[in-house]
Length: 228
Image 1 (tube, rainbow, N blue to C red):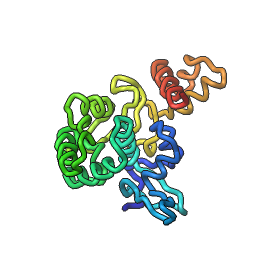
Image 2: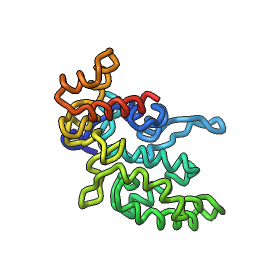
Image 3: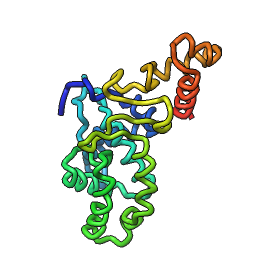
Image 4: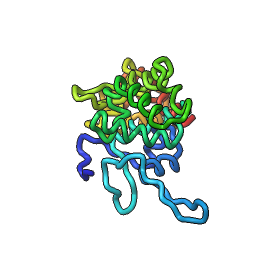
């Protein structure tokens, strides 16, 4: 676990929940684990993976890779993968691709089918992951997320384009600590959105910040999607 934030992005649990659309409680549980009582005994559910950053005064924070990994985990859960299977899949995927963030690596797009197929055999529970091991459904879960990412030669995500790579909004851990910004000018989308929300015309806001009207429109769309 590292304490260096440079080039890694940094997000609070609240910020990660807002950007990913995943409830805060779920983000915290996946990253920090949680305690519960079962059959009268106190038990502990460990994190799905160990985040890149140590807690700061007990406050958890996420790196860019942690944030992207959250989105993939959530997609599998929504697709019907059980919590137990998710943990097993994440562990096995980490071993396959040799990464603590296996789901968000480009390598997983290929190796993932084998990972889930192997889990199906190991679990010995009919149908537990067969819906995921089918290529058609796997592509429906994974491909939309992959198309929003730029990858390095080592298969790690470099940038996230939440509206698509042809639009102006990007999250880049090497710029503004991963804050959502306009791609060309590095202007925070939140600033543009709030300026328009205050009653200013989008074209006027574009002129003030030195960005294109299209960049302002994309920033507004992105921020409204987060608020929806």
